[in-house]
Image 1 (cartoon, one colour):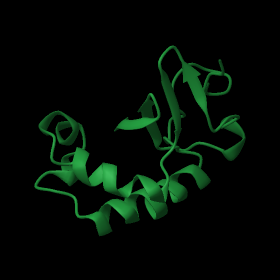
Image 2 (tube, rainbow, N blue to C red):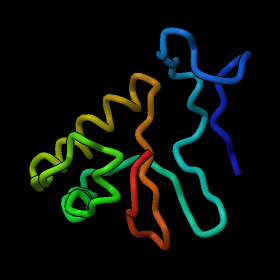
Image 3 (cartoon, rainbow, N blue to C red):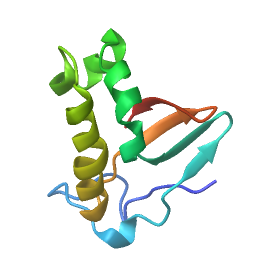
Image 4 (cartoon, one colour):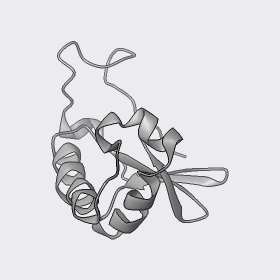
Length: 102
């Protein structure tokens, strides 16, 4: 199993930015779960998850529903841009099914 660590000190840099070098892996696996990048193909599942109160509680900008189009934009553009800037958006998958986002 791999870990995501900040260089030199524990915790985020003071300015909350990360360098591309800090992300060494794009897939982390543990017992029963996988963390990997959100993909455009996750849009339908994100749309369904946005209707779940517990899911949307942690992502206030999806409250009230997340259209498939908005979910697709999040999965494709937002996630890709965050990964490129060194601030990954991880999909949490259990048995291959998207269950959440961190």
